[in-house]
Amino acid sequence: MASRRRFALPAVLAGVIGLGAGMPALAAGSRPRLAPETPAQLIAAVLAHRSTPLSGGVAWTPDLGLPSLSSLQGGGQGLPAAGAFDPTSLLTTPQTFSVWVNGSEERIAASTSLAESDVLRVGSEVWLWNSATQHVTRLLVPTPGSPPSASPVDPQTLAAGFVRRLQAAGTDVSVGTPTYVAGVAAQVLQLSPADPATSTVSAVDIPVDPTNGAVLQVTVAAAGQARPALQVGFTWVRFAAPAQSVFAPPRGRTTTTKILTSRGFVNATGHAGWYGYGPLTPTSALPGIASASPRLFGSGWSTFALVKLPARSPAVAALEAAATPVTSGRLLRSSLLDVAVLPGGHALVGFVPPAVLEADAASLAG
Image (cartoon, rainbow, N blue to C red; front, side, top):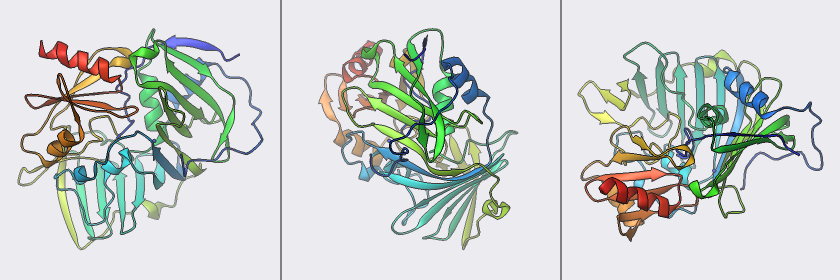
């Protein structure tokens, strides 16, 4: 029987959204033989893990049941277009990425049928490159410290976001049957809400390489849905330093330099833009929707975010058109993420049942 402990985990799960065909295959007919691990040991391994040099392929598969959000693509925020990878597609379309990590150097490459988009982080700089336009965007951090991770699909970042928010009560934690992910033997950390009525999430499985604490995959199951609603993990991985040439700043026909801020970036003319390549959250996964940092309400798995919507935004108009009328305004439902669009230019976003989100909307309005 799996050993279990109880913790609390906010429903605004950092790093997720923002997963099945094309996912990492497990070794058929075999299970690795690993020394037993307790939930506390796996949690400690994930939190103690420091960026491991690696090269790998990552697959991202969403099955959220969302309506088409193609009109949100680009978000009107000045990011490279014309065949470039659009983060909005992570909500509805399976994706594959190539990733390279070596300390403060990170690179992720996303290919479409028309072009390749690369995001490169080197120390305090982030570079965005679009092969279709040959345009390079250079983001600078105005204060000491590193910018957000260049990869929005890093299993380690997603898992650490879950685990760091564990508290004293509210989450059942167990260790599942060992398995293989991308050919690597892994122990499986399992999280689930102690009260299933509090969240649209029914369980989160996190296979961990016990030799180095690296997270190999994150699978999020939705209540009442047989297939994973969201899954991201390695299809192959090599734990060794990539060639240094991988992290050379990109060259293009044109280069734009912007200053990265906590809410996005601004260029020399003060034009605001959306930094859509950091770790995904329920709000940052909807480019052009949230115009400022969200405020969090609730607790545990039923935490939700209140965001201000930008006025006269095509993306907001598209969101409202995709949502259905409810008492509190309009509601966009999926198997995991629900969005309540309120009168007065705000929205509630959370991994909570629609009825709970509507009740939250009514309480805030009161």
